[in-house]
Amino acid sequence: MGVFDLLKHHRRSIRLKGYDYTHPGVYFVTIVAFGQEPIFGRIVEGEMELNQLGEIILEEWFKTAQIRPEIELDEFVVMPNHVHGIIWIVGARRRRAPTLEDFRKPVPGSIPTIVRSFKSTVTRRINLLRKTSAAPVWQRNYYEHVIKSEKELGQIRQYIRDNPLKWETDQEYPGKVK
Image 1: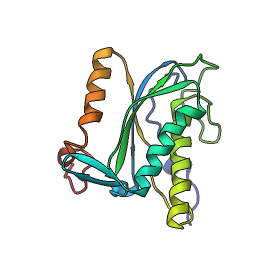
Image 2 (image 1 turned 180 degrees about the vertical axis):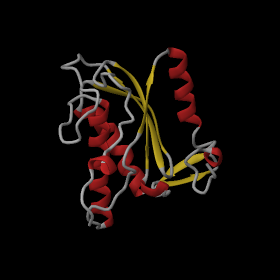
Image 3 (image 1 turned 90 degrees about the horizontal axis):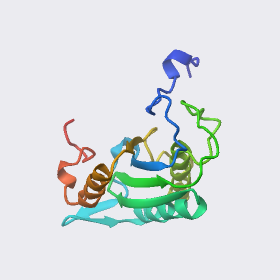
Image 4 (image 1 turned 120 degrees about the vertical axis):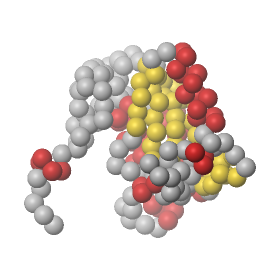
């Protein structure tokens, strides 16, 4: 194993610089399976058929709102190799989140911490089911977008609803040339 090089191994943030991710608002997130492998089920005639791994994701997504009273969940879909969901932060802000969340210091109630906790719980449950130890389930990061208008919210809701119907043209479709 090589020597740790801060410049080479530094995690580049994909967050909006200076944005407070604990701020009440609406957030669209996409989380992709490790290696974009279609391990959560399959699309049959435009509908997603979840397998056991996909069922775990569905259960844990909805548990997220049960254990975090500061959020509400909106549209959500599990796809063969990724998930899309809308998260509303509705609770009062407790404190300002740093611009770049330190991986070792989660900020309670922030989108990065909510997603990290979700990914971690799903990974733990899937690894127990598969009898694997610490096998990756998710790609390292995730995509997030701050939704800024009702029109945009409507468009993203429709995109999520239609995602199984448009699977073969999806950016995450296995084998698609990017």
